[in-house]
Image (tube, rainbow, N blue to C red; front, side, top):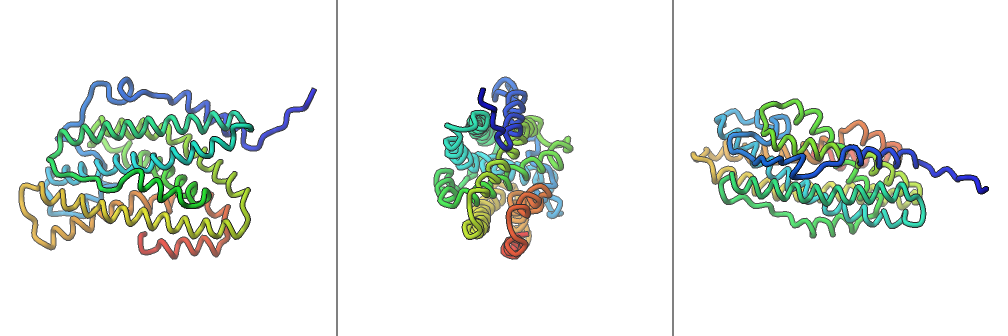
Amino acid sequence: MTALIEIPNQSRYARAVSASKKARWAIEADVLRGRTLEPEHKYLPDGLSLTARIGFLTERERRLFSQVQGRSYANIFGLVERYINAKMLELSAEHVFGDQIALEALVRFSDEELKHQELFRTIEQQAARVMPPGYRFLPDPNDVARAVLSKSTWAVLGLTLHIELFTLTHYKQSIEPDASISPLFKDVLRFHWLEESQHAVLDELEWRRSDAAIDAHERERGVTELIELVAAVDGMLQVQAAADAEYFLAVLERKLAPSEAAQVSATILAAYRHQYIASGIRDTRFVEVLRSLITTADFERILQALAPLL
């Protein structure tokens, strides 16, 4: 009888499969349950929206400020999952004639990302019905996906792990403890978090697998491209932050002073950089994985490049 060959990390892929089966949920039956977003609820907690930085807003205006950001928060997650799904499908092909447990884990990952995209599209439709007209989400998911996927697998997986980990941090540290936000919006992010928890494990496994297959020169190029990807994310955030500030100011029931309007714009951009860049780069697990793959010099290069955004 031929001895079984132990496949590295197979048990971690198997645990991800098991977790996926246990966490499995359906959009209508488990998340929505016949509920809709209500105009009197906040969508994001103050710790993410940075609403507390703007002292001149009324309670109603602060709620709208949270809703605008929450709407873009859902849309941005739906957008990034477009490229993540494409990458996972590509990586799953590398396991077709190998580790079938890893293949199942990545196929489940892809299926869940498609479901998440549908969930966030549904939430956008609900938000459109209860919020004033005029909101615009400007980034095109396909254009963003093509731009991200033009980079090396090493860089793409680094960005992906960064995103998955800050998703988990946002929910556990800011969203779950806040009793004042929309129960439905919180449930959307809770069920998203349930499946993202094992996605982060798979991101790390695939990033390490990719890293093991490249040389130092390719890894250094990957670091450069990771910096470029984060800079591209910031460019997207600047565009959407400007659009969201314009929308917020346009639908307010009063006209703010120019200095107040400028503070609103600056706070939205600061909030988006906090949500999508700083909270990931500062995540303990992300830093641990990143530092285990690259040299100290390259780690310092990343910090220096991203310092203006942090």
